[in-house]
Length: 121
Image 1 (cartoon, rainbow, N blue to C red):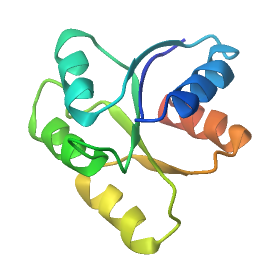
Image 2: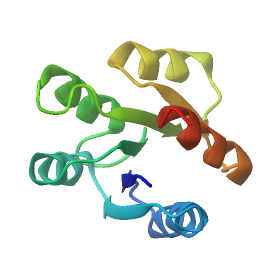
Image 3: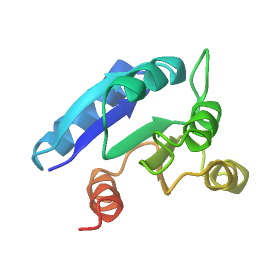
C-alpha cells in the first residue's frame, strides 16, 4: 500500500482522510501548512500527497510550485484539495502541477478512487 502525506490546516479533515484511507491499508504522515509539508517531503518518501489549496503561511499552490521545481519530489503524485469548485482554482491547481483534485466537502468514495488512480491501480 501507499505512504501518504495529508496536508490540511483543519485537524478534522486530516483525521477524516486518514480514517477513510487507512481502511484501504495506507500509512500516513500529516502536516498543517505548506511549509511543514515541504519539511516532511525532504525527510520522507511519499507515494501521494493530498494537499489543501487554502492554508495559512504557505498555501497549497505555493507548496506545489516548490515541489515541482525540485528534482527530489517533482514526480510525487499530488491531489489538490479545494473547497471551491470554481474552475479558476482547479485550473490553478493543474497549472501548478497537481495530478488531480478533490472537492470539499469530501466525497469519500471519490477520494478513495482518486488515490487509487494516482497510484495506478
